[in-house]
Amino acid sequence: MSKLDLVAFDADDTLWHNLIHFGKTENAFGKMFDRHMSADLATKHLMETEKRNIKLYGFGVKSFTLSMIESAIEITGGKVEADTIGKLIAMGRAMLNHEIELLPHAEDTLKALHKDFKLLLITKGDLFHQERKVLASGLAHYFEGVEIVSDKKRDTYEKICKRYGGRVSHTLMAGNSIKSDVLPMIDAGGYGVYVPFEITWDHEHEDVSPETERYFEVEDLRGVIDVAKKFG
Image (tube, rainbow, N blue to C red; front, side, top):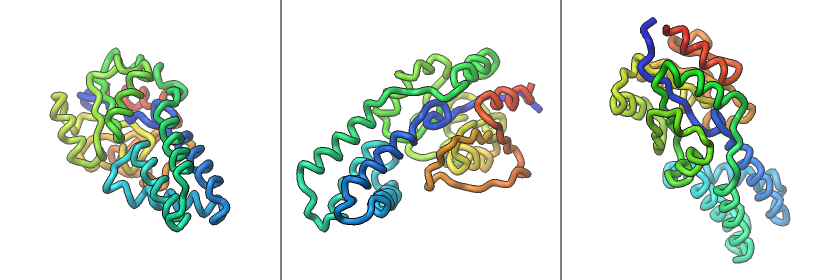
């Protein structure tokens, strides 16, 4: 195998915690409206609204907050009180301000790879929030570049690789989402490394055969080092 031109990483739930904050807020939302329906049904309503709104608002906390407000209006038949809307906005603000908690082996993995490979961070979501998280993580100096994108598709990876002087056929992308991080990179002709995380957002769920070409699955981030070393 030829040496890799680029090794790219996803950010949320690959290098640091993210979905736990959405999960806690979703549960809190459900309990707020248990006078109108069960907490589980209210939470399910929110999640369905969020998925529906992705194509309009994109990914991120701000989109999620708008979906909470929309769901509250629908659940209450338009009778949601201003005080409740204020609480939902405060919940979204709290999510934007949470501390960054790195996942196990995140910095050690980047430090080990940084010596031999050009590293990129490719994450989707709200530009301002993602920039803040990258800086707060203390990991920014390991990356040749940070790309915050609206979505991750084949042409997304092709353009990014070209921008950094790398061949997509010699690029490895590691992340916790098979749908966003792994399969589009493989489809573009590169290599995908699935790093499992204990929580997977339903929208990101996808199955892939272990026999898929250019596909690797590791137990945790340390496994990305072993995969990269296979390329010399």
